[in-house]
Image (cartoon, rainbow, N blue to C red; front, side, top):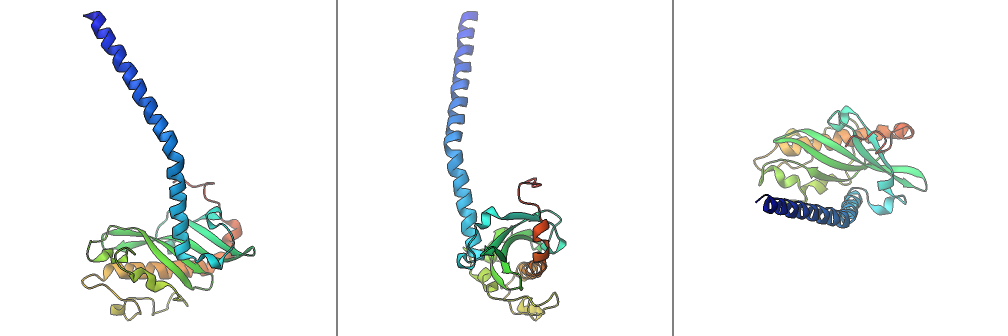
Amino acid sequence: MFTMMRKHGITLALFAALTTGLTALVHGLTEPGIARQAVLQQQQLLDQVVPPELHDNDMLGECYLVVDDLLGSAHPHRVYLARKNGRPVAAAIESTAPDGYSGAIQLLVGADFAGNVLGTRVTEHHETPGLGDKIELRISDWITRFSGKKVDSPLDKRWAVKKDGGQFDQFTGATITPRAVVNAVKRTAGYLKMMPGEIDHLPRCGDNDDE
């Protein structure tokens, strides 16, 4: 009986070793593809908020970290710099709308340094399906309405939903969500107007990035 148990134990150990080896092999084979896909998706997202024709550099290669209350949280946010002939012309920056109906809404905002918004996309949210989820591009084109709009100052009253006297539509039965996004985009574009003087002092992504 002891011999039989020993044989079973060896069989199980060999099976476990084989399974672990196969898992490691599959992971090793698929990991590069997953990483490439993630890079491709991030590049596509950047192209949506900062048109490629506006710059001639690799924005993914010019990633910096910024921390500012105007971006909606105390956590570091990534900013991807766009250059033309070596000169900074615009940026795509992560931002947070902390006051969504169902929690924080994560955004990527593209704008130049004069306050002109080039594009905006929602990257994460928990808003109510059928109501607040209209901030998603796959649900509605509402998020595209920011493109071409300019933030003149922090007191620019046009940057509000129509219910509050501004220029942006709210959703039927849902005002909190679009209000939160409008305010976040406004603050973010306003922040980018101040950023050129900080560029040379920003840490690069990866230097102090805990994520």
